[in-house]
Structure formats: structure tokens, C-alpha cells
Image 1 (tube, rainbow, N blue to C red):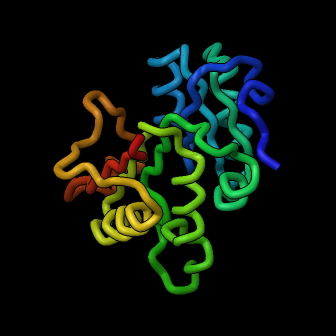
Image 2: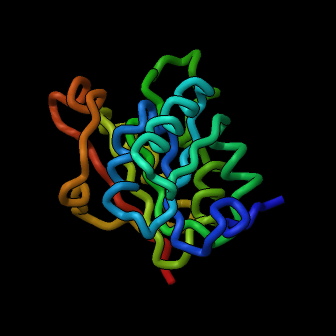
Length: 181
């Protein structure tokens, strides 16, 4: 059963979703820069979700909500159709090991759920230091009905995280996809 965003945030503002915010550096920077947008994040680790929530509270960011859970389940079961303005998926699936295959997001079911929940005109940002991962994600999202934006570059002023600075020494690969409409 989908949960309407006004019930979650107490207002009807635009919602952007970050999958796997890690320490929350990017999420908190985005929320501070756009106080009239609600930011919802899904983090696997409960301790990390709680730490980000505490940081947001200390900074007075009332437009941030972080939950602990599996993004595939949350997006697939709780996010309403055509209700998300943007998805931010940065540095997903950090372990390309075979044994971590069941944790990977770049699958057809997740791509379908992202496409279904993205509002017309909404976008999906995907970035990683692993080119093949970005290409795979872009492919499954396109197969789910989103349109790749050729030659797209990360948004100007997008903050980078310590994780990105450490692991993307050879550059960050980026894809932008759009839901037509």
C-alpha cells in the first residue's frame, strides 16, 4: 500500500528520493540548498539512518526524512505512482563481488518501480566510479520506460562526498534519465 507524501511530510511539496545516502553528506547539502523540496532517503544501515536524521535535526533541516530498509522493498511497496520528482542513486552496489549479487539495485524489478513512481518529467541521477555499473543501470532504466539524456553531466554544484573523492580518482561516470510526459 503506497503512502501519500503529504502524510509522510505534512505538506504537498515536491519529493526527491536518495537511495543509499551513506553518511548523508549529499542528502543534507541538497536539503539545505532546496528548503522547499522534501528529501526522503532509504539507507540499509539503521545506525547510518539514525545518524543522518540526527545531523538533519541539528542543522534544522525539517525537509529530510531517512528510513532504514531495503530500497527495493520501500520503492516497490510504499512509494505512490508518479509521486517522485527525482531519484538520486550515487555509488550504488559498491561491491561488485558475485556473493553480493542479491543486494544489487540494477535489476529489472527495481527499475520498473523507479519508473512507475517517477512523476512525468522527473529525473533519475545515477553516478559511480564503475562505468559498467552506470551503463547497466541506465540500460535497465531505459528498458523500464525512461529516456536516457545523451551527454548529460552531473548537475552543476553537486557536492561530492568523501567516498566519491576517495574512490572516483579516475572520474565519476554519470547517467541522467527522464520520465517522458
